[in-house]
Image: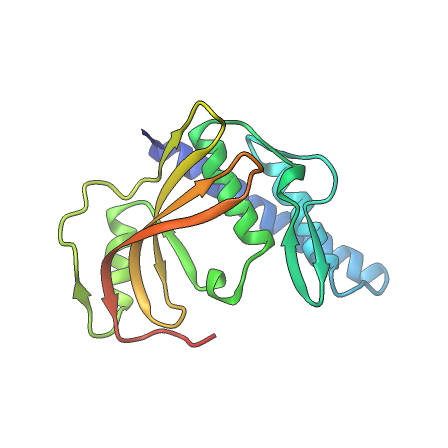
Length: 191
């Protein structure tokens, strides 16, 4: 199991932030030039996310849309089998296929981010008092699969801080594997 360094996490977050800024600018410029289809921003964002990524590439389209549901085409992604690239890929896929609940989820990697999440929570109850590290960890297996653990704060449905475990299969699809509750609150936004 490898723990990402603070520098690796910051680089990945910087890549995503740069992609969002770039996509917003490109969308504004394209929209000013001519009308765009409803899916234009997602396509622009996908391109920016991949171009800014440090270990994720795309061969073909990254998703399809059917009946207003975005379905990632996982097999079209090429991911370096490094801890940082797997973490970055999870964030990219989450941005592309992002549900309303993902939009209310934040990755926690530092004690300051954890403290900020706790301050936001209503009727806070800490379930697990000691957390050694909030940094993401990745276990890369010989068969090409991987296990990713990341701590998140979510406000969808209920407020929670939890350590999620995700399984990356050989087709590049993440599967929810489990979670460990760290803290919870009474608040939350129903989506």
